[in-house]
Amino acid sequence: MATVFWAGDIFGYKIRVPRSCSAGHKMTSAEQEHNDEGKDGKEMVGLQTILQDAYLRAFGELADAVGGLKSVLGFEVMNEPHRGFVNLHSFDAWDYDTDLHIGYLPLFLQAVALGEGHA
Image: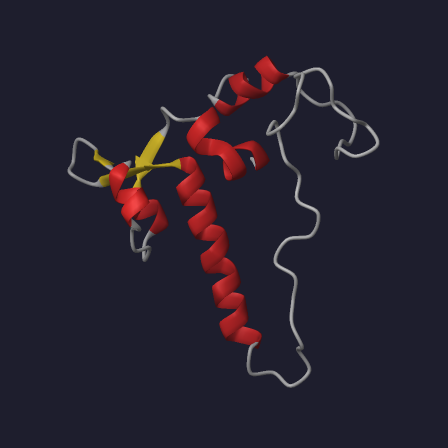
């Protein structure tokens, strides 16, 4: 998910989903450039767009909900995010001192297959 969040337009460039999954978002000119339509005429966008839109909307809702509370000074929206496969020089070169891992983790091709729905 981290890879798709940060670089889904590169790693998953063929995967398109209806914009309705990301309702309430207004397109920027850069997004309009990469827009296409599905069979039913709905706007189709990449997974990176869907994930980032949802993330920003969620923290917007949180800010709206706690913004008026006297006891809340602020909040951090992302603490030490994982980079996924972004900037990984070798798919077998996870740094076990810096990269989050708990137990076994899939190899690159296994992760891609899992992302495509193959178990």
